[in-house]
Image (cartoon, rainbow, N blue to C red; front, top):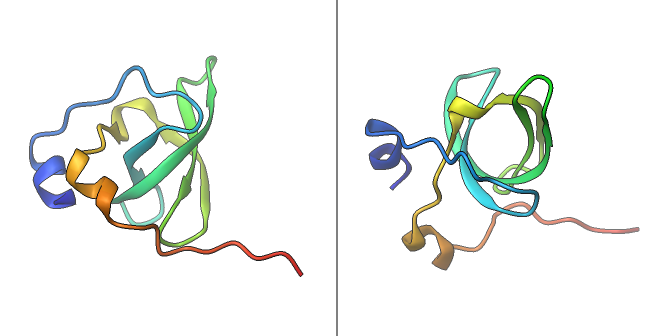
Length: 84
């Protein structure tokens, strides 16, 4: 599903904190499911939390934040947070 989204990318220009998106991870340039944490107006970049890995990328360019297809909403995130 993610591969299909990235073949004809449509940047999600109206993404807000809490929104689910497909975002490119800076280190390996691969797209993954993510949740927007914040937007930096000055640099036009997002901080995103990758919901299947539990890591954060704080500098994702807005051109690499894509719309989240409805069919992905049925798949639960793989990352789990725990408090000890």
